[in-house]
Length: 335
Image 1 (cartoon, helix red, strand yellow):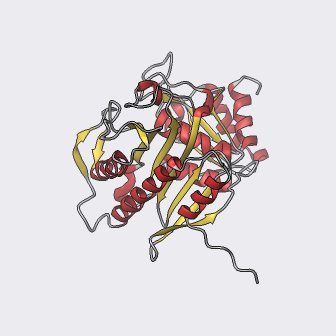
Image 2 (cartoon, rainbow, N blue to C red):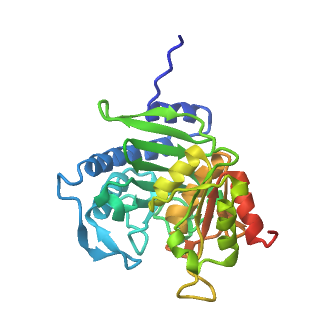
Image 3 (cartoon, rainbow, N blue to C red):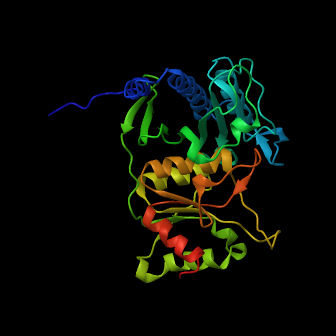
């Protein structure tokens, strides 16, 4: 029997770099630094309940949300790891109102990240994770980056990924040539390739949406979800964890559709979106599309949405292409 080759994420990055003769190694170095940050965060998450990382930090973030101790820890770890590497010109986080100042900020790349998606669930042992995206700077080189470098659409992404901290810790990332998943071997302290060339199924049998908001959805979304429950559809199974990273991770592996539509509870004219464009929606859409899926913001391709502010929110539908196409047909009034 042929033995499977064991590939660490570092080896995978180097081999991917060799495919591009023009590569300088800067992006590889940036991603290496990030993987070390993920290992540190994973170790802290795995000791939650034994060390003083559970509970609230006693402050709120830019969105008015309570900050957990693990939010703060994950934020500090990533900033410390990425501050001095020289690869970045700018860094932006869901937890910070403005661009994060860098000690050395004359690099070629921009990092946007959600330090701990789903952190409100950590006290009940639900999967949480870190989401990141990387752009090339568009401002002149030689100095720090600016807002223009950060506010780029998804189609300008160089790389994106996430680390999900659950029953095992997995790193899933893409540099624009497919999606690959690595599982952290705690005995070695290494991410090893476990899910090469991930491809999302054309159609799934699971829908993931917070049905507690159903009363405030638009009519098209309500009709679509009822359509999924109809006997002619199978029916689809409902699976909603409440951590975007966990729900999209499952959708990426098994297919189906993840929805977070606008709600019309408070703003009955325009509705309110929940997910952050830069830190959640765009990096996840990049991965889903790299794996053969589709991602929308309403009826618009999500990757084409242009950010205008650091903390812009957007409605989201992503997953198997046939399922997202079905949802689009409802949104566009064809069904």
